[in-house]
Amino acid sequence: MMAAAGDAVAQDIHFSQPDINPILYNPAYSGFFDGSGRFALTYRNQWAAVAQPFQTMAASAEYAVMRRRYERDGISAGLTVFNDRAGTLRYGTTAASLIMSYYKSLNRFNNNFLSFGLSGCFAQSGYDAADADLLDRTEVLQNAGKNYLLIGIGAAWYYHPHDFLEIKIAASGNNLNRPNISYTAVGETDECKGYVEPRFNLYSRIDYRFGGYWSIEPLLALQLQRNNSELVAGADFKWHLSEFTDNNLTLSAGVASRIGDALLFSLSTEWTTMLVAFTYDHTISDLREASLGVGAFEVSVVYRLSKKELYQRKALPCPII
Image (cartoon, rainbow, N blue to C red):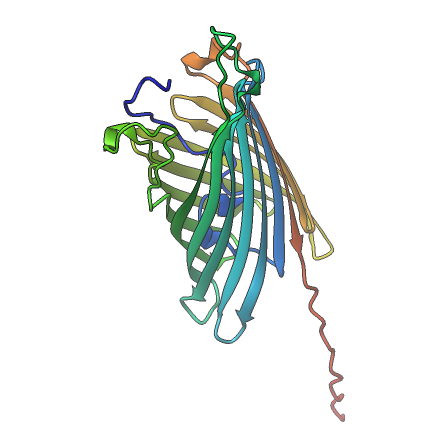
């Protein structure tokens, strides 16, 4: 690997649930939640049949710094941390991002919002050579690591014209500063450098309510990073069992396709301020032979801080008859 000084092409981490923990994809989605804050944990284990599978963990926290009711706008701050490891040498990335977003209502009905977000990420990539199996037992392979910064921006649009329809459309760009993370010091030309290429995301989700207790939620998500692309298309079906303020309960099941790669099956439930989601990726590409047909398991837990509004009931005088 060290002797080959050509281009190396790789992808950023990715999850199968783009809107369970949305700020991992787009900083503009910080603040798009009911309540004063949101916390999320996600774990992904990919190709468990391989000796050292891909394991990815991510955590995020968001807080509504300012919400002006009559100006119908607000500012939100967020923090994301993720760790990705794979292979015998545990090669991977650990990163932490700070996120700021601003959202503004586009009308007086408070059902049409536009949001802009900015993220700054400090990352460290590297490997642990302790388990390296070398042909020459006298050779020593040193651990290697690289620190770098990543910049991202995003925009999101949300429209909720009535109780039966919600529309979300978003776009973002990540790794826009394109840092060099080459582990070799050979030469100064581009051919001897390894860059974290910019990654662009497009996302749309529609929530249409029908039959009183049911919703269908079509999804379309596209990611582009240099010569790599990922297109996910599918839909979730949601059953609204209870919609009381203190006992809101929903169940969801979904099927989607990462075109040419995997079928995605998901189950989730939301109770008041807690959401738990599970997704299984069934590999349909040629990689299923190496993975023995075992795809990826992904679990997410999301918790919202909910502010209960206090209402003061005023006595009205009875009419004198």
